[in-house]
Image (tube, rainbow, N blue to C red):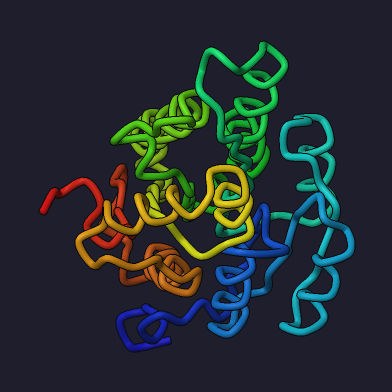
Length: 252
C-alpha cells in the first residue's frame, strides 16, 4: 500500500471478493480480473462444472449457488465470508414479447435478476458494516434504462437493481460502503449467443447498430470497469450507474 494508505492503482491485495454468476461470460472475466489484481475470489454459480475449472485456473474458490434462494445464500456467505467486495452478476434473460410470457417466467426472471441481488447483498452487508468498508457492484443492463423489445420483464428487474443500488448507497455511506451499478450493452457472452439463437442475425445486427461504436463489447471491458469500482481509487463514487455499452442510447 502507498503512504496514503491506498493500494496501487487497480490492486485488490488482501480483499475478499464474492462474484455471483462467475463461471462464464462477464462474471468469469470479473473473477479473473479480481484474482489477477490480488483479491481472494469466491465464484458462485449454478454451473458446478465450469465454476471449479475456472477457479483452479485463476487461483480462486468455486461454490454452487442459486442466488434466488435467500436461505442458501445466507448459508454460503456464512461459510465462505466475510467479504469486502460483492459483485452481483448472476442473471438470466428470455427473449419473448411480454404477452408471450407467463407468471412462471416473471417469477424466474425477477427471482434471479432482482431477488438474487437483494439476497446476496443482505447476506454480506452486516460484516461490511462492522468492518467499516465495502464495495457492492451490481451488474444491471442498458435495457434497464432504455427498455428492451422482447425483454420487458428482464428490463423491469434490471431497472429495480438500479433503484435498489441508489437506496443502498444512501443507507450505507456512513459505514464506508459504496454501491454502484454497471450497465453493459451487447456483450459477447453465452447469454447473448442464446438471444441470437432465438432472434437470429437480425437481432444481432440491431443490437450492434444501436451502439455508437458499431460493435459488440467484450467481457473484459466490463471487468475493467468492475475492477475500478472495487478499487481504492473509486472510494468517492457511489450510487452511480456506469454504462459499458459502446454509447448505446445516445443516438447517431
